[in-house]
Each structure stands twice: as structure tokens, then as C-alpha cells.
Length: 315
Image (tube, rainbow, N blue to C red; front, side, top):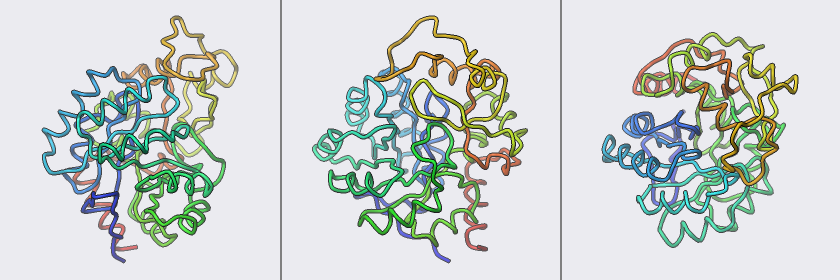
């Protein structure tokens, strides 16, 4: 089996593997650049960053990967969505991924700047709308994904439906952790894959060691669905904080930053994600994909790519 040729606008990575953009400094410049250097598309999670920090992350990633493809992921759910998109475009980012809601305006902004826009969707209806508005590709993200979820249906179900609906590239996301998973998605019609959880367990991911160890020790039964103030369910690894959320005992925000367009204020999701990244595991949310328990080692990104490529070809 051969890898499909993934083209997103004028961009063509060596391998159709995209590292998912994980917010609150989980996927930063070192990880994105390493993925880009390995032949994939590296994504900086822009959500939650101050504008100056986002600028610096983009510039740093470009310094570390002069010829690679670097993108950003920006959630539509944040209040300063338009401003974040503007910063990314000003810094001449290669591609913008967006989800957690649907923006029509971003396609005009991307077209004017010559920046491809990729929309994360979970239905054929939204995929068709994104194509009509001007998306260069769509990410078909299923229930197996980590973080905020837009569907209760499997990636395996939605990829063929979306592929049959649109004429732009379809990138499968959710539960993909090895080369065999990639091969399965390609057989279902995917033009590429987006993987986030696998790249957390890389040497280049800058989260705390405690965060990575929580991933490594996760069992299948430890992966749970939690409530999020964003108004969407989320997939995370069980810990003391997730138990407090389940019991409606999560700490209320001490100071609201008004970072989201809609927020229930049950707890501060920004603070919870930041806490876990810094190693305060039981004081935060540890988002992960459904199949995190299958990953047993931390490797350099280049080694991860070698394994993915070898497993894909064997499959």
C-alpha cells in the first residue's frame, strides 16, 4: 500500500500525516517543527496563547524547520478568534486548522492572504458547507478523538460518508495511534490522517514528565468522557479532577478571563488544562484520545515517523 498524495491548497507534505494542534501549550514550536522536519505537517495549538506568544511560537517553529509545513489550530469557540487568525496570517503561517464551531468569515480571510483553511467537522453536512465556503480540506473527526468532541459517531463511520460528499481532501482524525490505523483510514477513503495523542508521547512535546507518565500509565478503562464549560463533552484520562467534575465538585473559577464565547463557568477549562500540562495532574484535565493505552513508549518524532511508515507498509 502506498501513502496517498495529500494536497492542501498549494501545500504537499512528504507524508499525509498531520500532528493535531493541542491547545494550552501542549503542541508548541519544538513539536510542530520536528513533525514538519520529518515530512508531515506540524501544528501549533494557538488557543489560549497571548498574541505575542503566538507570534514567537510561529517564528520559532519556522526557524527550527525552514522547509517544513507549519500550521496553527485555532478554536472558533474563543472570543478573540478573529484576532488570533489575523496574527497567524500576519506571521505568514502555512495553513490554519479550525474547529469547535464553524466560522464563515475565515475563508475570506484565508483567500485574501493565500492561506489554506482546513475545517474540523464531524458530519457530511458540515463538510459540504466547508467546501462550499472555500475550505482547502476537511478533518473528519470522530468520537475516538481526544479533547472536545463534536459527535458520538466513530471516525470509521464518518470518513466514508464525508469522502462521498466532498471533492476536497478528507483527513481522518480520532483514535489513530499507529501505522495500521493509518492504513485502515486510507482504505476507508481518507487522503491523510491527523494524530495528536501519539505525539504527546514524543521527546519534543514540551509538557511535563508527569503529564506524559499519566499517558503511559493509562489503561483502557481510564479513558473517560467529561463535561466541559465549553458546552461540549470532552475525552480525558481519569484523575482526581475528572472525578470532581463527575460529582459536580470541580472548583469554580476564581477569576474569569472571559476567553470563551460561551462558558458555563462550572470550572475554568483554561486553568485546568494549564495545570495538567505543568504537572499538577490532579488539579487539571488531561485530554487524550480513546486509544492512548496502546502507546507504550516515548520516542523522538523522527522515530515515531519511522514506526508509522513501517507499520503502514506492513499493513
